[in-house]
Length: 280
Image (cartoon, rainbow, N blue to C red; front, side, top):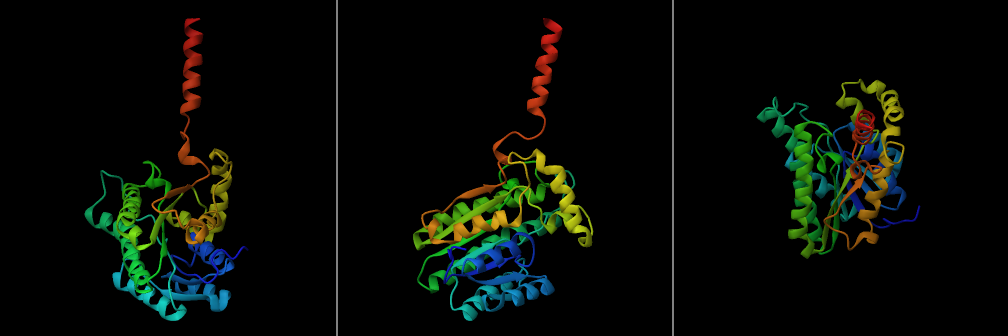
């Protein structure tokens, strides 16, 4: 590794599995000290033990404001400072379509995916100010933050709102030297895929491997993404290489949101061929 995060301290919410786990591992490999913030205690504690003195696990329910305030305080106390806040924790939320979604399910989804990001900004920014220094805040958005149709209504709206948080953070926090950016993953093979489709977690590896085989060929780069694909971009955004980058929403989707998905191109070519056959 190139030690891009040497002497930096980070928090990764949802850090016990999937994108979060991959990011924790890569942050540590790049020289950072990392707090793993999650509610998966066994997985989080095991990861922290494996990484040794470079990692700390703190149980953190990101829908609870006091828990976010606590993990920032614990990190600063344990490692002496905070340099990077990665608001990554999430799940699908309420899977209902627009015609069925209720206020309770929608609010629960927003609390998990959007309100937690605002609160992550709030307490990280306060800590950065207390240190009288700059800082980097990274948030996990989604391809569903850029286009409709990638997921259910609640998730799509919540992830669009994450982009709004990032833009507002630039207006308020950039003058303080605090950067805020988002990563918009496309199809990433993590355990959340299994949970989203009701597949038992004991079958998550088999299920994601099956999906990768089925879906990879439909992606512009010919494969689906991995947690480490996201982690590498998070390293860049947290590092000094990105010190003039703020307000960016970076798609990490193998090009999927840059092209028209589905069969439109094939369908229009077939229709033109049919028309020509009829009229020529």
